[in-house]
Length: 87
Image 1 (tube, rainbow, N blue to C red):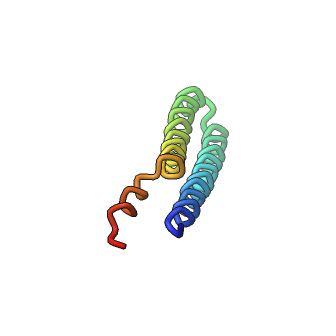
Image 2: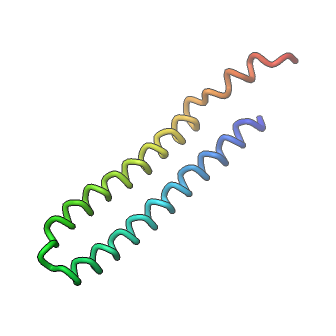
Image 3: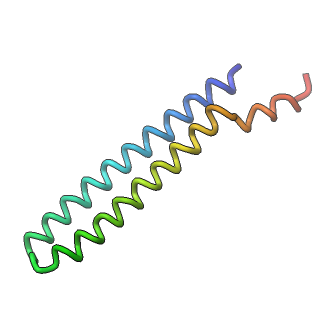
């Protein structure tokens, strides 16, 4: 089935690009946090709170993408479309 193979490729792309984006985003955010904490050490507590909040949001978007990709891989909603095609 060609559709199952394409869904497997799409699942890999969704998870791979999501992981890549999350890693790059957290890396850039961490470097900017350290840079700003070095410039203004008195704001470290407030900056740390915001950094962890943003890290949670970045990870949440990756986990949601992974969940959707795994849903496509296991309970594929596109397979119902194949049953309705004329043969």
